[in-house]
Image 1 (spheres, rainbow, N blue to C red):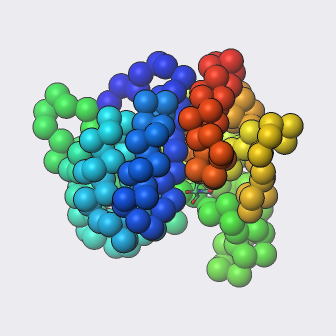
Image 2 (image 1 turned 90 degrees about the vertical axis):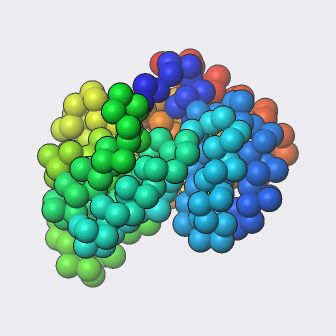
Length: 247
Ligand code: C5P
């Protein structure tokens, strides 16, 4: 897959809805302004592969955010099925599934793709950004989460994974450790507080689109700043303009 160079291709909009009709109604409003739509476990659990098919018909790519974490054989099957769905350009798994699971996922991502066709890219989630040091220690993982995140990114890269989902806080360190070609997808993006209606919601560590791109993100994931905006098209356009000015 070759990602086109237009700034909009770096914008992924999260379709965090539980109804396909609501998701489609919203997606249609902004489809020409975004690179991909992210379909996560909420929409996929309620609407299934039909959600992928119908959203893909709008023309933007799909980031299927189902964060698989299971034994290698099962994850390979799930990744293969994800990659076979129309329009899917990004799929993800948990790096904590270990290197055998990551290798199985990396092999599966190209297995069902016809020769010469673009394959989707595989991302790993390192440590969930909702987990602080205490939460990480509670599950038996030692050391500062930031160090662990970079080590897991390196592990994923060695296993053949194409990139990671990471907060802007870790983006620079991952870029340095994993190089220019490794994909970094950054959520937690907010417009400046000076912009009317800009809010942080429950995101603790936010960055503006410009900060995220400047830190080295290839893609930014944006939900509520566009979903809840009074004018979603204007909000999406503003983010695309900011991406353009940061590149
Ligand atoms: O509404 P908001 O812009 O906060 O949405 C961000 C999206 O990115 C949501 O779909 C959320 O689940 C996802 N995400 C995140 N933080 C992560 C990984 C994914 O906010 N570390």
